[in-house]
Amino acid sequence: MKYFNKTILAVAITAASSQAMAAGFQLNSQSATGIGRAFAGDAVIADNASVLARNPAAMALFDDKALSVGMTYADVTAEINDASLSTRNPVTGQPMAVEYGSLDNAAEGKIIPNAFYIQPINDTFAFGLGAFSNYGTGTDTADLTAGRGLSPIDLIGKTEVTTVNFNASISARINEHWSVGAGVDVIYGEGVLTRGDKKVVDVEADGVGFGGIVGVTYELNANNRFGLSYRFSPDMKVEGTLKKLQIPGKPLADHDELTVPMADIAQFAGFHQLTEQFALSYTAQWTKWSNFTSVDLHGPDEVLKEYQWKDSWFLSVGGTYTLNDQWTLRAGYAYDQGVVDDIQSISIPDSDRQWVAIGATYHLSNKSAVDFGFAHVMGEETRITEKSLFGELSAVTNTGANYFSVQYSYNF
Image 1 (tube, rainbow, N blue to C red):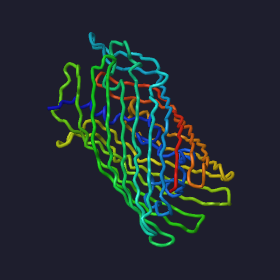
Image 2: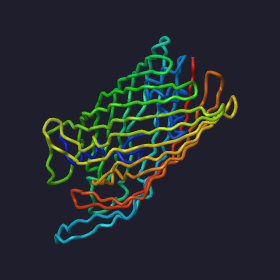
Image 3: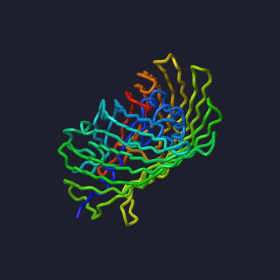
Image 4: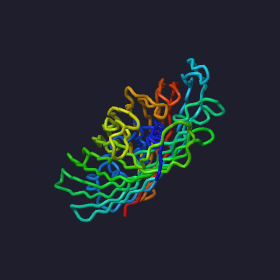
């Protein structure tokens, strides 16, 4: 029988934070071209096979087989300032405050790979495969309370959440204007948690979920087109092993499975080739984070941790400029709305963010290209408070990130 401390394991699996650098613990990192234009128009531009991550219907825009492989490095910073715990003296029972000071960087850099392949079957149908990530995080706040006699070990420590989305999709061209597509997602997720500077808690958990995506594209003409897609995300069933627990007086629960709700994603995109050299694109992406209300035990109606997030919007606009036969340049701006509502968390110091992005493509030949993307993401200073088993933790947080991405694309 596996045993879990309910509060701690809930944090272990879902303490995905803004270190993912999109609302909640969502990732926007599926391609170098997308990063270079702040993902403006990515559900319909279809300049390489990575469009499969956003809209399967856009595969109908390909006449040849297409392959894209790449990776993104997310250089994340997370500052925690003025951290303190409001608690009671364990001897006298009188109110007291424990000051922890500041931590310059609680985030961990991440390498996020991706791969996509699109195969036209005939003039009507196309098939595609993709491997990428929509959710993930990495934080380590252990140094904030290292060496302190009293600390909220249920909230402070190392957390890492990784997901991989394997997608298989098909598209169909209805006529010269309309195309539709649909796909199946198999999502593998795992989480690792340690709490306390002596690893008083050490947890590993993983699970598999199944979702899907549907999409449509409308081509007004050769220079103007629109795309719309909706991704259905599953409620993940997560199993784990609690390797170590040394918290006297805290009860254990004889459950070995948690239900973690994931967020659906809808997006609308437009692309307009305004001149021979310049194109304008834009995206409005809505994420149903209101589905992420709590983490529950599988079976009994027992809530482990309340979140009560709100839906969020990611709005971006970008431009693409064809400099010559070898070089294509791009840039973009995005506004990313935070998801935290009334319930705050130091493990989720979420806030609104702004993206400023640039990118370029170097065409090696008429069939192959190397893409580069860079985005600077700026969060907002946020004061948070969160209930602990040992009192109430408060702090001021500020997050940011630099995305560096490279990608190779080939048309067969």
